[in-house]
Length: 107
Image (cartoon, rainbow, N blue to C red; front, top):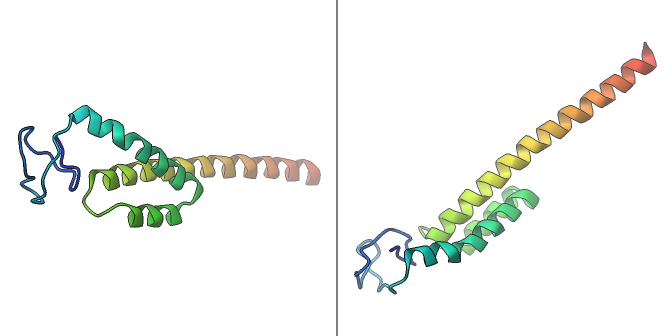
């Protein structure tokens, strides 16, 4: 299982996390991933619509070293990279359309 405070893997029968020293709540490993899925969605949406500001907001929301923070960062980075690539594709397509229109007018 994973510690809900620091996000590091610990023994399933551990009462205290060996990494952060906090008491653990025994939970199913798959359940801990299901809880974090909405956080990835939030990271993706913040990355798409807010860019760098979304990253700053997300980093302020989640404590350092937690599994939720790392999940958020992964979602944000993925969404940000996709939005940059999509922006470049749209820019190139628009620039080629404008160039073809201008060349047809002047030549």
